[in-house]
Length: 279
Picture 1 (cartoon, rainbow, N blue to C red):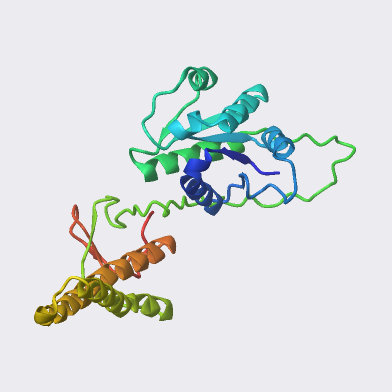
Picture 2 (picture 1 turned 45 degrees about the horizontal axis):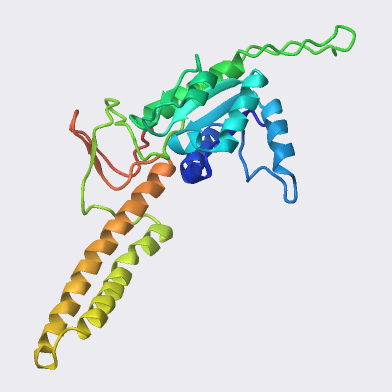
């Protein structure tokens, strides 16, 4: 049984999957269509069952969601089943009469302002709801005798919010990190292959510009074609470098480490890729 039912508009599917991935990285099980609907199954049967069996109804709220009849039906079913409803707002949208009525008293989480903070607050709220659920009572005659175990110190689970690419300084906790440009060094074969985007983009851009320009440059000014090739080669190189650097940065942040070299604008300390960040 999945703990969280994720309701969303298909227009917002990419952002809804992002939120679901963050929740599942933090050990929270999610039910989300169409991923969790078996092939050949009936949506009108699977969705009400999933809502009835879930513990928390997570609404990915936006104007698109308010215009979706499926989302409205799912929200109404969640209200009728007495589920805890957590609206996660993708944008600053005014609620229409139907959603305003159904969401009366529900605490909203504004992801359009500070995404990482909103996600951390949401995860903490979900964990608080799940931890507060009463344990099932086992009848005395059915309860087996088990020797008491020594009390173990429960480690606090770390919240992982790296999807939004917002990290905090390990020294002072500030989120005002600045990437030090042109200092990305490859650390493994994957990153080296990513760097190959630089010559690839250079060649592709050069050929595209040269091909297009050849139709417009007169024959008596064919020398201009070499300038176009040179401009495409240089421009494509810068373009490829920017793409490669961004891909490496995102890859390292997903693994919990800083990308390339960072400097905190508050405490002025620098961190390399081996320094774990509190995402």
